[in-house]
Length: 194
Image 1 (cartoon, one colour):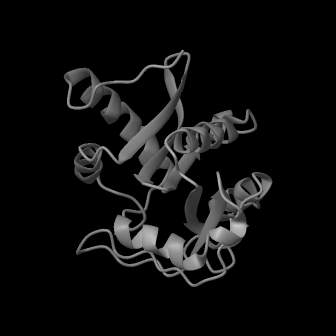
Image 2: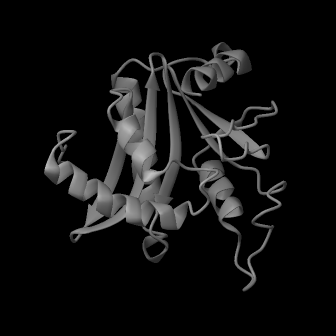
């Protein structure tokens, strides 16, 4: 069942509070995500949406989506670790690409930390599992995403945050030949975003 909550209602705020508690577990660093107040501000912008997966009354995944006319930016896609392997992330990505396609977008870009340069999180966790950065990269590779071969630094999200210089941008054509989607075009999306 699909439900869309009207923005700026008490029910939507309560749901968003529950969502945000789960979201920050997946993205603990304030340098790489918005604060609660910043997300609320972003939700007032009709170009921004948060898509959430709920199973048995529990929030188990989500993704943030910015729409910039012909392009979309998918960011902060996450799944509850206990629910991994059930293709929730793939379903989220599929939903987002169809949403953007239906609204006329010709391409979608996603950003993630480069695990080969992710000095903060390292290559492998202490217990030998893949780091989150490697898991996210493997996820995007399974989806068939292509990397944009250009340096990308995520600007600081606020005055007290730091910029993130170890990022990768991936692309997914939606309605266009890949050659039409130049690096310059995708970088212009990010300029609109930041």
